[in-house]
Length: 375
Ligand SMILES: Nc1ncnc2c1ncn2[C@@H]1O[C@H](COP(=O)(O)OP(=O)(O)O)[C@@H](O)[C@H]1O
Ligand SMILES: N[C@@H](CCC(=O)OP(=O)(O)O)C(=O)O
Image 1 (cartoon, rainbow, N blue to C red):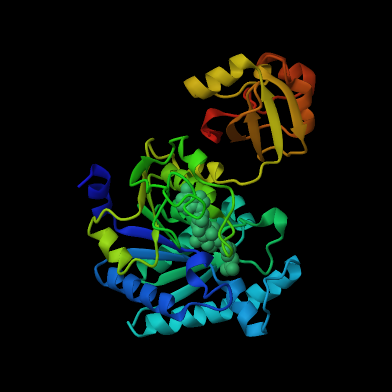
Image 2 (cartoon, protein in one colour):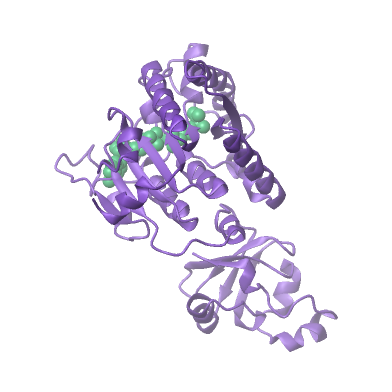
């Protein structure tokens, strides 16, 4: 057995994500058998002492069926209405299946905004951790009813990875309609081969996933690979596997080599830096000169105003900004010590000139290294 599968056997805190492609009966309605089997498998893991968070899609598909809609609507307000109706059916279906096992469940609906705000993030974290300590299975979905374009995760792969960071899960299992990640999209390349294992950060993976999704999913494989990278930041292994495979969760727990395993190849980030790295949106962009980009990236140093060539966006002190190298690659993200206006005035200057320019000094760094995360 590979070292990584061996490590997987020792994991006890799991996030399991079930995608629309798997869960919905041809796009309309929920696949009751799939939900029944999942609840069985998760309840079995719970009996063996595993803590499991379930991230489940399916609200829109369930809502469409309840409303008698034949086609997935385009308008956001219709999607939101369908999600609101369907989330009831989704939770009802899980709740009744888990009840057969005497297992309590809890509904947790999140938007990206909930996790972007530090205090709400910490609240969500303690609620989820408390639920796990109580032996409850939290069932998480995006809060589609209120999520506008700007504040949405968009796909549940991203949501599941951020939840894995939040509860510091050791394993993220992404169940979909394919047996795993192939070296090319199997829908278009029948000879594509399954990747059994790879480092989550292996850049070659990006070339394998085709941009499109299945008919029902939102993310496709690309968002699953990115999710594995996010999960790796808190040290989690990711498995991408088929939810149609019989008894998949128990077989994974036993160390069976099914699906694709993506392992974390760097040390986990400190909890605060994980939160920073999980930010999907930033308020501004700082363009670094080559020297600053090098010391930030290679020596993990703080960013000083002298190394910044230009600043874009409207940000306040303490908000998250991106740091770009001269080739326009985003190399880091951090909490900035000066607002946009102040930043524009001090950039290019050495730190001992800040007081002279602004009339005061908050900090000598534009972003302190403790508040800076490399990407
Ligand atoms: N390299 C690849 N390996 C496997 N599947 C891929 C690949 N590239 C693209 N895909 C597609 O991604 C789809 C799964 O993503 P998606 O439809 O978003 O599912 P879900 O709803 O489970 O998130 C598969 O049906 C598959 O056609
Ligand atoms: N929140 C949406 C699911 C979003 C979605 O489809 O994501 P995914 O399962 O990653 O393709 C729903 O419940 O319908």
